[in-house]
Amino acid sequence: MKNEQELKNVVRDRYARIADQGRAENAASCCGATNPSNKVYNIMMDDYSETQGYVEDADLGLGCGLPTHFARIQPGDTVIDLGSGAGNDCFVARHETGPEGKVIGIDFTPAMIRKARLNAENLGYNNVEFREGDIDEMPVSDGVADVVVSNCVLNLVPDKQKVLREIFRVLKPGGHFSISDIVLVGDLPEALREDAEMYAGCVAGAIQKATYLDFIQHAGFTQITLQKEKPIHIPEDILSKYLPPVEAADFNSGGTGIFSVTVYAEKPGSKPTKPRVRLSSLAEGDCKPGTGCC
Image (tube, rainbow, N blue to C red):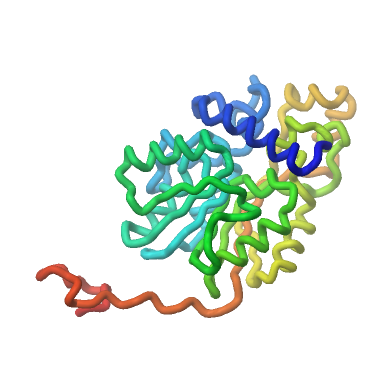
């Protein structure tokens, strides 16, 4: 397998290409990074179509869960989305946090940042911004986020513990994350583990489920909860590129498992109370129940 920087370059190159593709092309491949399978259309992604705030133009079919469904986002929250792509999860989060909140998307692929910013401009969302940078060294100050979300991205980062330390840093005390990701139970065959395409395809970079949860605990998080889990099956026409027929059959019927999980965890501490709305700042007739001004 390549070194850390080479792996990042592989991922950046693949996702720059994906940014210029349509959603159908991306959804037909393993996390959007390999040649299309002619047998399975939705290998990892979940269906957002009934989700409030969903923007079809921003959905490239690259996720493996619906973390915003589980993220407990409240009106006025500041939310950070790691690996924000074309902005889909940011726009869903924006629906939850409302115009009084703020959403920050972070992605290290310039083409994705451009696409996401264009989507936000077209939607007129002034409280959603996209910052170019690595999620293991976020361009964000300490303690700014109430919630962090991410969808099928940590498996693409070589140093996952560093990312988790960064999440801990940018969260406010009492803040939390909800992250969908790919994990393993059992070992991948070496041919899959050592292939750069499978790494960019969200498989080879995945780690053991138990190790993943241990990393979260060691980063200082509490209330760690597995919110959702589903198995991921690699179609035979993709698997056959890496394994002979007998090994491919053993892989699909054996004890090895590739799973999409959504994990919730909290940063210890108490959230500061949100400031109450001052009456003098409201126009006559704007005082509404629940704003704190009546």
